[in-house]
Length: 355
Image (cartoon, rainbow, N blue to C red; front, side):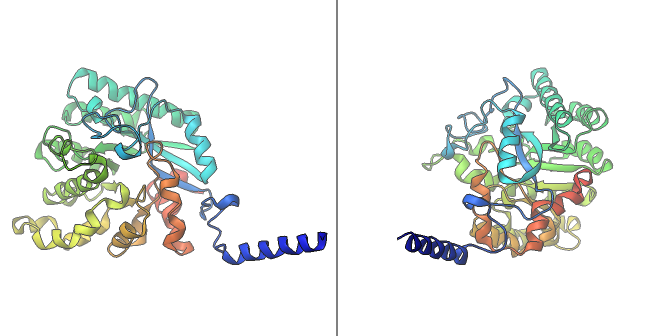
């Protein structure tokens, strides 16, 4: 009887081995396991200072467009560095570059209160980085659309706090997108610093309460990334400041899907901003994979953008990390592409994390 049990165990184990992928993507218990030495660099990872809350995102505020929970985009709640590190260790993430969650309604209010909130966020992000220098970087926030205060905060963030880049939202809730002419001094300064710019979508006031039966987090977030990239390109920001490195969230949102239509409808009087064509400009951007590793968006992205531009991101903690990583094995990416997405491309942008 014992021999029969042992035989059945061996047979089951052999069957499991035959069905399991042989590319090292899974740890024990079927968990995603990165291939890159040093683990992933997560460029889409959210912080929130104590008492700051989750802002508009996922709490039904202006920026969120939905209630708490997955349907409304989640909410950060009481975040701690230790909480993130625990999750990072679980999923093989070596470094997270922190940025503020959906709180544009707090920091973009164009008042002293908003400017103070920005400083609070940045000081907290810098402390996380100082306390855990091998685990965290951070993208500093700026008080869009206050240009002069933004310039002061950029200087403080780079020269004093030693930030890794700047985080902005896709709009300021006052009808301005990144290409608005009054923001040009900000891009000029960031171009001078060869800044890495992380852009997170934020549903604009015009579209936050559309009544089609679902949260704006379901669709508008991805449309908004496309609006903002269009604004950057058609207003010549990326043409005038090629030193800027622009990271978009969620595999570019709807941008890869709409790129062909955008090319055909691009305004002829702005052709000077796309000397090599619109698609060439889109291919220069960087794309994090947070909550966008499903086969459908990934097929659109990879049909247009080279693998040198893919970055790893999770959107933690408004989104559970599993939302992103559970889909990666199904993409059947080569080891080289996985390593580029997980870490190597980010090491080019943030060489201090190179291993």
